[in-house]
Image (tube, rainbow over all chains, first blue to last red; front, side, top):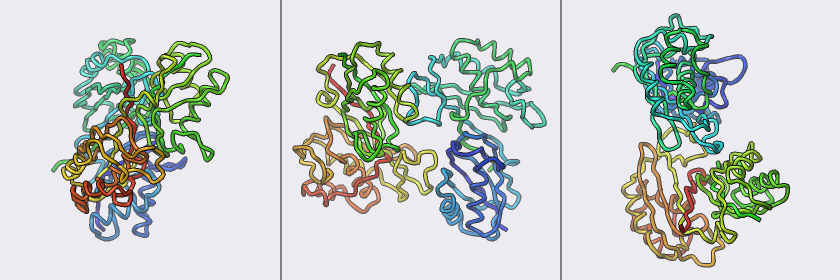
Length: 247
Length: 247
């Protein structure tokens, strides 16, 4: 047995999400099928983050055990060969210790939420950003984002279906910047609750439109009730940027 | 009659190109259908650049005449409404003089060619960049690009099917830059020959791989023979960035 760490890019559009499910093709399932095509037997692929349907990744991380050791480039290229034509790409395969755990060992996860803030529909970036036609005040959004930093009970900012044991998380960064007609929300934490970044994005958009003040966001946090925060932004704009480990 | 200038974004992937053709859906045809849906009669749409199948645009420009004057926002929004679900978006509609000619009045056209220079297949940018797996030397590419600037007979760099009267054009800029794993080729001229930017890209890639020297590119230019230059790069990486006019 030889364990490999995979760094993975995917377009989440055609998938039911990262996790294998009965109702359609998952990213995990696509990689498991590719691994089976490569090594001739089923191997489970363990991901660092269970992205939802439609959510993209530039740098998802997963691990899997192959029956025997192979060159890293061989693993990467063979998986990519068997992944065709899925929009999933193994950027890197690295031989790691047998106890490496993509999920449990992750020290930091970074997400980016892209809002296209313009009137016209998206043509090139359709499915890859959230179109918000009302002008957004990114300064107010940044101020509100700053009020969410640190260790909190984020019950207001997690899906009611979230299965995490505790709603308490430490948010290390939540930065709002504008690049032309795009507004970017960059989030960084050791781990996130289900839908947390999308609820951040939906709530900050409400602030950007001037419907909420930054103080309203802080108040929503303190209430610890999902219905107190803003809507869950669509998956289209969300990217798992990378997952970091010690060493 | 009221003439409008349209600024248009599109994903060229599903189209046979800008120009109306018998063998499939064109961008021009999609906009003409939308205009007919809006104003109830057929109107011709005249584009500034006839992009090929698979070529994208962030800022194509076209003009059309509507039977009566409408607010600019109404024209934009109505065309976008009728364009659904095509990946074509009218970014702007502007009322212009009756003699405005999107093609003939254009003073400058800018194109960007995106090369993804990495080993792994493209997932998120599939169809939106050219994947080149061999490491590219962007410095050598930039040097070669510089040798193509100015007024020349570009016979070596135009499709054998090019219908332009003269192969003589003035190339105002051809810049090669690297942004991480992407190599960008930015071209600027009053007008271009058929496939000119794609042949630039294919030729410069050959230099970047070390198979050709910058001097070979200059020699290819001087020979005035299409077969002397490099291959035509795929349409996926090409974007019509914008078209500029006087005033």
